[in-house]
Image (cartoon, rainbow, N blue to C red; front, side, top):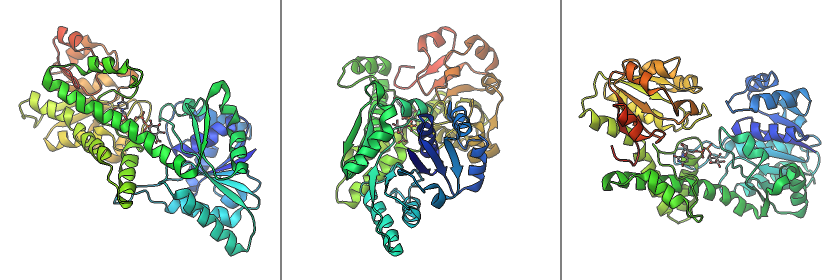
Length: 439
Ligand code: UGA
């Protein structure tokens, strides 16, 4: 089996590398020459645990290749995966110019039957446009070559992408011919051991599945954040409520952790895009609109607690931030709640000292030197007026509170991820604020 994966972003790189890992001949293609040169040397554009080693291993075994030349790479391929970006336009809809550009190039250069697979998250109806673009190019060449399109949405989580790919909960494939179904089943066979299912369906349903999955997960989070805010008012503890409802198997205990709002490149973008798709087709996604607005408000919840604790008197105060990325095990800063909190603290005239195990460089591209970056977690705390926990990195879970107590100016902790026990901190003389719990 031989495949091409176009786009060496997060999805493309993980997909290509994992297919190579099971013995498939993969060429990953990108128009960015520097990126491709770096990848050939094992220098990755993203941080993802375990990926670098896997890339190097497969390059060495000559199963994984990197190229900027799509026309050559596609020769003899059974399938071409399109995994290029779909940046949100001004109005929230996904911009398909890169996806359709790649489709055209495939049409111009293909020499045999192949399956053109959309892997990027694309609106319902995109595969149809891809089909049209490829066909137009074939017609322009006077070629009678045949091809199929397929939609194969990705459900990877950043920080756990390799495991998610190798041991998927499920693989969803939208197909329009038996030939394409057979090929996709063969390609994914190594990942189906141990009962991981592959679910075939029509193309629009597969495209919709991706948006429905991310929107449902975002809904769970916003729902719990709403409940958490009400718990605070009503004297309840959301940690207890979460356990209480999560043990109902119909609800489940995953993705019901309240916090400071969801971020990242997927949930915000996909929720927006589905609202937009519905709108364009005369339907209003009422629940998703609320999911979005609850999430926006939630990003300010921690700052509001800080403001209340200090009676609005924030100018000149110093705050230690633990964590900057939108979630642990990634350096991704896209839509990170930390950005909103930093902006509000700076606006209020505060000084911010931040530490993140991997995202500080990425953060500095956005925030610059408006905040101080420290070499470790404890350095951020020295003479701080409070500690704000923004991202639940493992190394923040059991810090030495005796040391923190000595270094910090005020013994106050704002825990945006509910990773500490309120009682434990209060016994040590700290003021503790969590999400959805009593102060
Ligand atoms: C998400 C989905 O989980 C993946 O299945 C999907 O493939 C991916 O989007 C995508 O579309 O590419 P990801 O954005 O990497 O993956 O991150 P998640 O682990 O899902 O976390 C998203 C956000 O939700 C984070 O900000 C996290 O802090 C927040 N979250 C998550 C909560 O606030 N509470 C929870 O209980 C769970």
